[in-house]
Image (cartoon, rainbow, N blue to C red):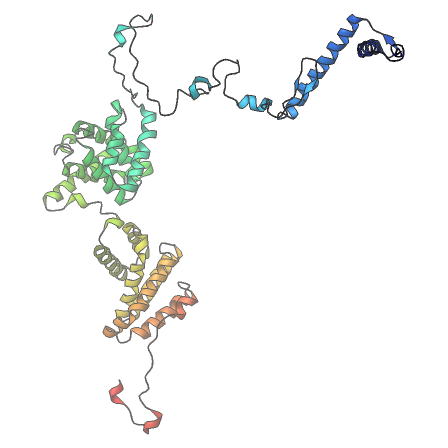
Length: 460
C-alpha cells in the first residue's frame, strides 16, 4: 500500500498560488502600512513618471545610449538609438513635424536672405492682367537713372577734386568722361573759371595743363558761349583773386590770349571790352592779352607761353636751360633769382645735373671769381634744401667718374677739383666720406734712383 504524500508535499499549483499570495501581501505592505489596490496603482504611476524624468535628464548628457522606457516603466538601454541633443536639433534642417521623407526644407533653398538655390536662373514673370494691382499704363514703362543737377556748393566740392587730380595725371579724356557723368545744368559754364582759378595758385606746368584742358573740353563738353561766359566771370572776380594771387591780372590776360590762339574764344573778345571797363585789374588783364596777341602776329608762339613741365621736357633742353641759368648767375650774382629759376624747372630728380654742370664750369674757368660764386650758390641751395643731399652727392660722384676725360681738355682739372672738394667740405656742402673718394692724379717720378740722376723726358 503506497503512502499518501499529499499531506507532506504540496503540488506545483499549490506552491505557485502560495507564492503569488505572499508577494501580493508583501507589495500591499510598504513601511508597515497596508495599501489598497487603488493606492498601489497611484504609486506605480509615480514610479513611471519619475523614471521618465530621469530618462529625459540623461538623454541630453548621453544621447548615444538610446535609453527608453518599456511598458512596465523599466529603463531599456540600447546602442542603436539616434542622438537627440538640443544642439543637433537646432542645426538640423529637416522637418520636425514628423511628415515628409526627411528631406531639407524647400529643397535646400531655404535660409535667411536666400532667394533660391545657387545657380538657379529665374525667368521673367508674366504679368497677370487679372491681378487687382495690375496697371496697364506701367507695362511699357522704361526706367532711367535721373541725376539731379548740381548746385553751387556741390559743384565746387565735386569738380575741384577732378581738376586737382588732372594736375597729377594730365589726361583730358578722363576729365571729359567724369564731367559727362555729372548733371552740371546751369553750372556748366563755371567749369573753365574754376579750373583757371585753381591754376592761378599752382605751378606754370599746371597752367599749361589747364590751357590744354580748356581747348579739349571746348566742343565735346563745353560750348564757345560757355567759355565766354566763364572768362567774363573771371574778369568780374579779379578784385577778389588779386587778394590771394597778386599777379592774377597778368595771368588771366595770358589765359585769354591763349584761349584766343586755341580758337576757343573769338578774336573780337578783347576788342569787345574797349571803353566798357572801369576796374583797373580787368583793364590790366585785357591789356596783357592784347599785347600777347599782337606779339603772336609778329611770330611769338603763345601756345608755349607757360612752358612745359619738367618731367615732360627733353633732357637736352633741360641741360641747355641749366647752363643758361649758371651763365646768368655768373653775370648777375643774384643767388635768389638762380634759386627761383631752378625751382621753376620742376625737375628735383634732375638737380644732380645742375651740380655736375656747375663743377665742370669751375674746372673750365680760368679765374677765382667763378670758383667762389659757384661755391656760394651751392651752399645757398644746400641750406635752403632746394638741392637735396642725395642729388648733391650724385653730382659730385658724376664729376669723379668723368674727371679723367675732363683732364684731357683741362690739364689742371685734378688740382682744381681737389681744392673745390676741400672747400666744399669746410663749408658743409659735402661730408668726409665724399671727400675721401675724390680721385687724385698719380705723381710720376722724372728721375729714377737707379739711373744715375738722368731725367726721363719721354715719361711725361
